[in-house]
Length: 176
Image (cartoon, rainbow, N blue to C red; front, side, top):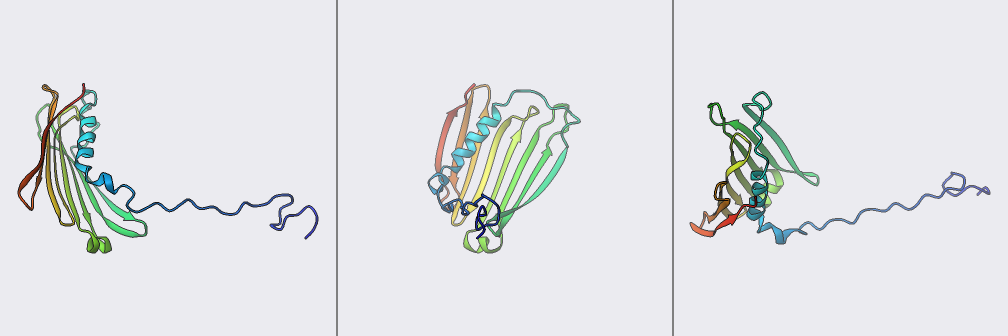
């Protein structure tokens, strides 16, 4: 080796060995998965707290549908369909936002997922109610959240569709 040159060819410079980020654990959040409906409630409570500014009539489309492909590492895990629709044609229209998730391919063989989420929005795009039907593996749940802005309450109802029983029912305060 010539003096002043490192074994990597550049004078006086040495390359650091390549370092890789640690691989994440696949189920590092499994403890939170059973609280998914409560996380959804938190999301919708936040959404309900948006300022009551009315959207411009020309700024929002009457109907729009978006399709997504969901991937997990190298595999196609499923599809998502998001729909935004104007429900009423009155001077003060209401809106509905729908999300349909389903697993596909190899993931479908391992764990079947078929979820439907629907949110009803008022003209200020604040959530009025939310309805979720989830079929994940052997678990089938139906969750309904209704927001009462005047009473500052959210009514939460979760039902097991297989056993036809109420899993959780409660009224939650909505912060101002």
